[in-house]
Image (cartoon, rainbow, N blue to C red; front, side):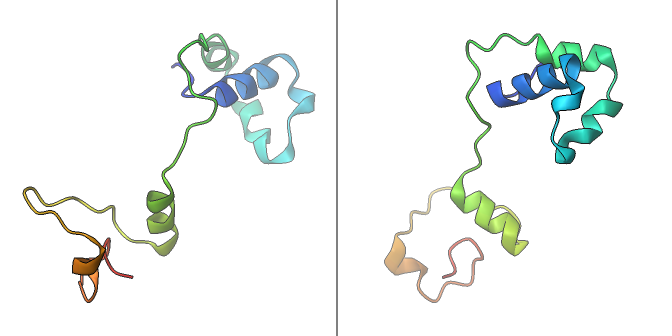
Amino acid sequence: MPAKSKAQQRLMAIALHHPEKLYSRNCSLKNMSKRALREYAETPTRDLPKRKGVKLAEMMRRRRGESPARPVAGIRMDASDAVGCRHPALRR
């Protein structure tokens, strides 16, 4: 299973080679098999992002507990149309 980001690849390499250097929040990685850690750690980092990003709007929706917004095909709305709208993604 390849790593999704350079940060994840580095973390798995630390867990594999120097598990004593892990932060307490990452101690659950000690329970992973050596094979799984090696697969993550050996991922080539050439085309990986530094960190796996989450868009700000998506992060705010998750915090509020809302479902992800789905765009409606063929309808374009700007900020003036969203005032008074009941759709959770467009509500202010």
